[in-house]
Length: 321
Image (cartoon, rainbow, N blue to C red; front, side, top):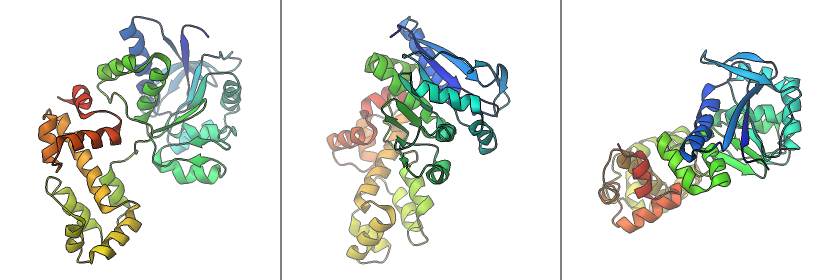
């Protein structure tokens, strides 16, 4: 394996620029911070020259035709809006390059909706993947024999790596960096870029409140608003049932059926998400734990790390203003 790993982005007209620039910043920052040429970043397309992104900014690309992939390469096809994605899915040169890469390289995969380009190659068959939330149903129809995680920020299934929405490509790149060079360099790069030290791949693509609001029926909508407004208060399941004018037993059963989790767990997650916001303003962790309704700072720290894979103290170092 060569000392310098190549990170190869496969692009096409209309790509989402952040799918390239976000992960590329992770790997280039690793070079800068380590004062070593750990990574070489390349951009390839089915043709050479200037490739315009959806935003109008252009990237200079080499050709995927005839490229010799190395064992140490990482090859990632990026995403785009549907009208551009359809053309890429039919691009024979890109499909052949991805198949060739999958047979040779250390890692291959996609960022955001680039998963659909991989789908056209057959490389997702019997694999576990994720993609942007808006494409989950379409991908499931296209790949009935693929296990699609509709919540994960990114998924690592052997050499295959896939990520969800555009910003999650940064999370996936940080995970790759950690796999290559350890947690220390990953944390330094994350701090340099002012992002999470590490958002685990299993963390949801959405805030819990947003997810709940999109699937709540008319019965539970007012309850969600009520809970969001009293995060700092002691609230029992019986209080929620009273608000809904239901018996506790009936409320518990209907809430759990509607949201696939218990009322108490749902409220804990709302509290932790509010805690993220407050820590980001610079409040001390011990102050935040009380403001989001935890009566024990120790319990708050344990719950926060279990949910986000990072201690509230380290989160504060990276995010506090």
